[in-house]
Image: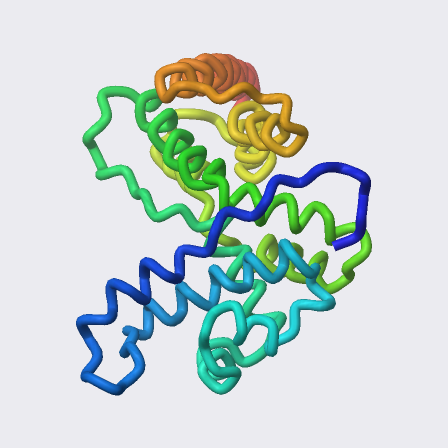
Length: 244
């Protein structure tokens, strides 16, 4: 990665040892550990994160990935046909695809559901290993056309976006007049998670307690929903004023 003069925190240790140790029971004497496909895939993605952080995208060779992950190049290529595909999956899964899906109907209000979604995203993205990945991407994106292509392809392909999905549900139910789901989703993300990420990137954010994080997110969600309600009311008045 180019030297920008900034001090970047050390990459958190790759948790491969724990995973491999947990798999020792699966092997026979004299044989190497037998890992499940999901475990091998996770180790390769963890190694890719480490290599991207330490060496940058252009120097992230499959040889380095094989060495860090403890996997053969053949195994890596069986799961990821190219370096581009590997890093595209790494960025999409570690930063954009949250695994938490709120159960339908378990929230008293739309505000509570939206707060729960944003808290789940924050708990995922703000983990130390995820932030190291964000720093690595920021360090590469100006000079690496390939990283920019990866980010563009994730955007175009419609990655899992829980905020936009929530807005689409509200739009379909007729609860709010929403003219641009993507723009509103990005705006809400910037008001809440985005500013937390910036604080982490520039090391100007004090560690927040879970209660403080929730209170901050809820504050901006309320402001956002008040704005949506006002827009919806205005749209309803305009509809009534327009003659049939």
